[in-house]
Each structure stands twice: as structure tokens, then as C-alpha cells.
Length: 158
Image (cartoon, rainbow, N blue to C red; front, side, top):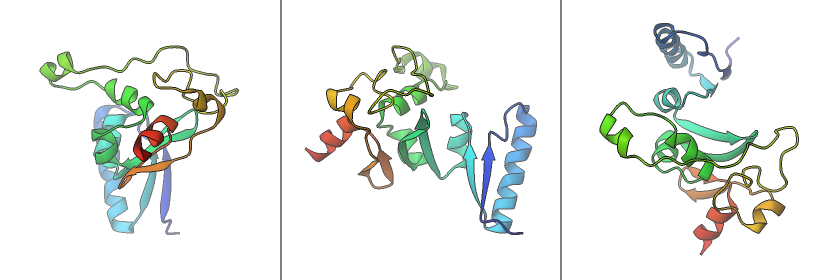
């Protein structure tokens, strides 16, 4: 059997750093040898930035942002992606002490009973009335960068 795509759901969780590095090297070798694509599910954003070409950010099971790792990580557009990336620590103490954190207010909604419209609206600092009525669809913000946000789409179209 020669699969074209392999789904890996948190394959490195509960592994120590040394074993994680070995598994990542093994996966890279297998990928090169077999012309294989991976769908790599992870909460480790540093790892995603190192091993992925493209990234999809989910909130309550819905895509809020997608694109190349470089574009999404350097220019996060969705408020959830901005908050998520601002929570990742950096090794440089000077950068760490001066960088701005995006703090989300409120409690996360119940994933079994998500809010109407945009599932992020109850925690979003930019939410508008439309956000409570209609679920935003992904739109192309710039080349290789898609976002699901009414506010950003209105700004981009004006």
C-alpha cells in the first residue's frame, strides 16, 4: 500500500523532546522517500512552524484562518490566531518582555452548543452584530492566506 496522505493526530504528545526529534526526522525521511503528504494535527505551534508548509487554525472545529505557515505566522489576521500566536513564548528575553499579548476575555463557548453566527464572536474584541447572525466564510485575504471573519472581509473589500 502506498498512501498519498497520512493523518497524524498529535503523534508527538507525551513523548520526550529527544524522541520527538527522532520521530520528526523519521517522518521527514518517509515523506521524501514516498512522495507523501501529511495532515499533522498538533497544538504545538513551534513544531507546526518547523515542519509544515501550510497551516489551518481551528476554533471550535471551524477553520478561522489558513495559508502558508510563513504568511499566517508572520501576519496573523484572525483575532483568535493573533491571540494564539501571542501566547507562544520566545527564547529571546528582550523580545519576550516587550511583545504585546492578546488576551481573550470571557469564557470559551460550549463546543456542543456553539453560539450562532461566528463561533468566536463571544470572545472577539472586534465582533459586530453581523457576527451573531451569520457564520463567516473563508475569503482570500492575500495570496496564500484565507480568513473567516466578517470584520476583516468588510475591511478588505473597502
